[in-house]
Length: 195
Image (cartoon, rainbow, N blue to C red; front, side):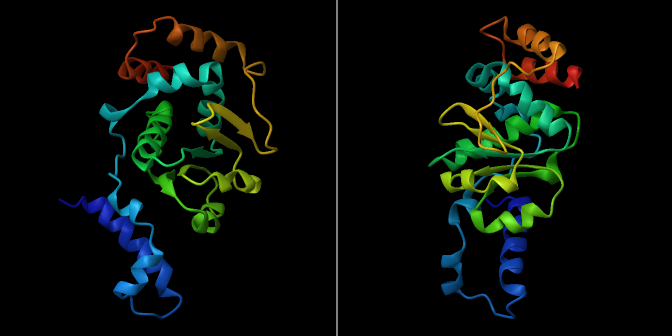
C-alpha cells in the first residue's frame, strides 16, 4: 500500500537528484537514496498520532520557544537519532502546535544533510534530521531541538532556558501543564486557542 503523497515526494526527490545531471535513473542509482525516507508515513495534520503532551512534559516551558519560533516563521530543526518513525511523529507534533496555521508546505519530517541547500532557500521550516552532524550547520537553523538530550539550542549553539519567556507564554504553559494526565488532543486544542 503506497501513499500517493509519499510517492510524489519521493519521485520529486529522485527527479531533483538526477535532472541536472541528465542521467537516467537505474537500480544502481537507488543506493544514493536514503531508503528510510521511502518507508516513512506521510502524516500531514494527522493529529491522532500526535505526542504533544509528551513533548510538553519532556521540554517543559522551553517548548514555548519552539512554538514562538515556528509561529514567527523561524527555521526549526528536530534531531532524533536512530528512530525515523519517532522523528516523523515528533516533527508533525511540533508542527501541530501552531495549528490552525497551515504548516504542511514548510514541514519536512525527514531530511538529510544533502538537502540543506534546498532548505536554505526556504524562509521558514520545521525539519527532522537523524544525524547529529546537523548541529554543526548553525547557519541553517534558528532553533535546534535535540529530542534525545531533551535540550533546545539557539543558532549560536547555546542551550536555551525558560528565563526569557514572556509572561503570557509562562502563564499559558502553567495552564497546560497543571494536569499530568492531559491528552495530546487537549493540549493541541489549547495551543490552537492560544494561537
